[in-house]
Length: 301
Image (cartoon, rainbow, N blue to C red; front, side, top):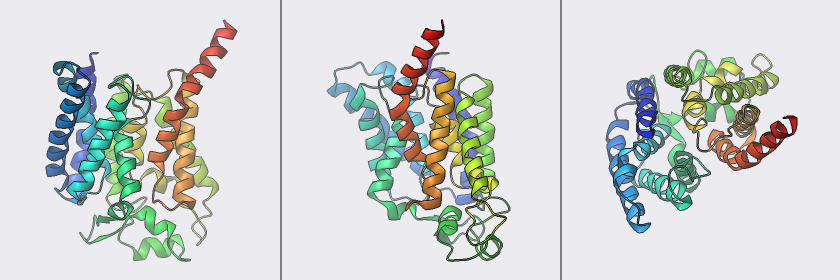
């Protein structure tokens, strides 16, 4: 498949998840998708001109549009346009072109953009509109982390951020992204070992910290799978073929590392979620994982 065909397929697979986000959290995503795409293409053009590279292929392969779309769907729908602009500029300008453009970037550009915005303006990520009452408040992950001695039953009963198994609305959003992700796996575009290892590690660690719902419980595996952007990250961010290992064993360890970092930050960190940090750390480990398992395979041959 050509690069343009792959990018188009991934964008199409995002549609169910985007539809669920708009349904549960409002239409604020739509103007931000348009704004991010316009700015992203402008940054792409400026970077190509500065690097004296041809404009045609890079502007039409869909990679910049995909990066901008991923950034938007990872941000709150009411995010300030200035913060969105910072994320897009960091993702396309730094994450992609600082390292030579598509194929040369060691870190996922969309995750770079998201992480720069998160670290720069953490307060902008602290609240989301409620899926059931429309009121802006803490997400289920944040509420779980700062529940001040409540049992899980008390927390679920008294906080509209919680649904039946995960975050209110986020249960359906994650299932929608799971559906799109499975399409990518079946089409051979996404390496299935990565989301499987990521979700498996996240679930296993959650199970170790789950004690049937006491005030010390860290949340059930189903909660962690269906809260926040877990399935979005597992199937669309972590599976970027440029930045993940090529070997099967490397992909498994790559996914396990992301899952472990995500759970550690969720349970003990200051940020509501740690998947982005896990992906960046795993991206940095990719050359070592590729080298380690390629050498092992060569030795066996």
